[in-house]
Image 1: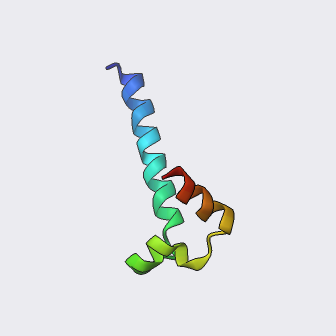
Image 2: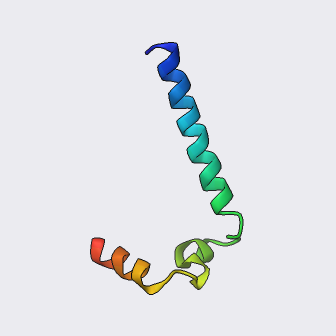
Length: 52
């Protein structure tokens, strides 16, 4: 891989980690993670059930 490829990969992975950490700041327990702290709208829950 070239230097430019590695740079793009590093920026992408760093951005993904940053986004994940910034979105999980309000979750304190594993139950909050799995239940989205009871804030998920019903269409999102329905789409998740139908997709699986």
